[in-house]
Image 1 (spheres, rainbow over the protein chains, first blue to last red):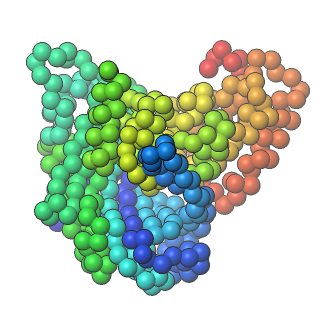
Image 2 (image 1 turned 135 degrees about the vertical axis):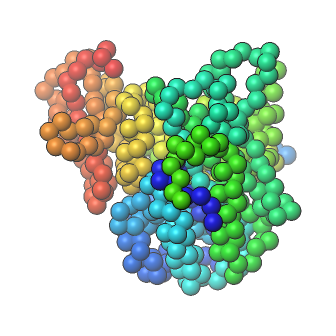
Image 3 (image 1 turned 180 degrees about the vertical axis):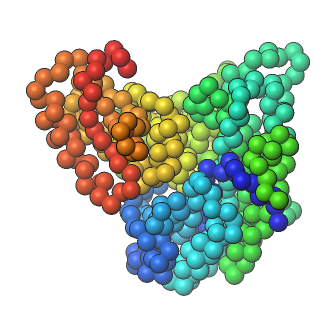
Length: 247
Length: 188
């Protein structure tokens, strides 16, 4: 069990299931799925999505554009939603983050609902992503960032001290390369007179089909533990104090 | 050489799986680029490269399917970036972001409303902000239309633009208002 905070910086948590191309899909599935989950995700919307596929062929760049439909199902308070498109299921939780104990059951509801209306033949990708916006009470020069973060850009002594922006990212392998965790830290756009940073942690299955369909939710639980550990690894005690740990 | 180096770095980033995303049709058609294809790189790269550079990045890959945006935060980021590229002036961005996070079902309404406003008021300068009602505890997204010279037709044209997106607001929790404050364009 990870640490709990009274003021967690999470602005969005996203859990994504991409099914393998051999999983059958037809236009009736969104409607059937809605019937299964409508007691939780009560409000339905539809969007048209363009998928663009580019390939470099000997005769030049080939571009294919496909139009697909995606349904968005919101909870009553619109703080959580499910996105369902062809062979794609996404569960989003927006701020205020409802805690893992409340978010995970919704992931389960959506996943089990989908499995009950189609035969999932494989998982191409599963991802659990947490996007954090961390606001500091005072403007902080980037060179002073190490007071708050344990994941930050190194600036050599011969470089200027005043950096106007930066990007930093890393991808860490887990489970012998089966999973990966991508971590990105950037200044938040439009921070105003405060200092704010976006810490984006995306843990995902890097090898298609390496998780059995029946074990997807176990993977999600494990991914959550890893994300928690990575988050804690990215911050210092100064931030922990700011987030107000609940003992 | 600098550009080449940038492409190499980005291509390497892509090989590592950094996000390259497309946006929904509704958003594409809703912005001022009139249906052109947009490829949205998640915000970490977005501010450093132009669309032209990104095209080179994409073509430098072999076979590549561009994934759609799945995060609402990323969707809001790319929406605001596109609005800025379309010369819509933005008020306090953190307030707009907060509002859209609170009412994510409004995300798709905004491009349609901007397009409608520009269709009916092509000379207008647009300004998007969160409006705070001073009398009651209420706030909503307001898109202000400002023109060099106001005449009687402005309200009529705003109403005509409204008709193009009003039904999209049905059942939405948040609210969006197209209006004018009759201020000078220069005050933007």
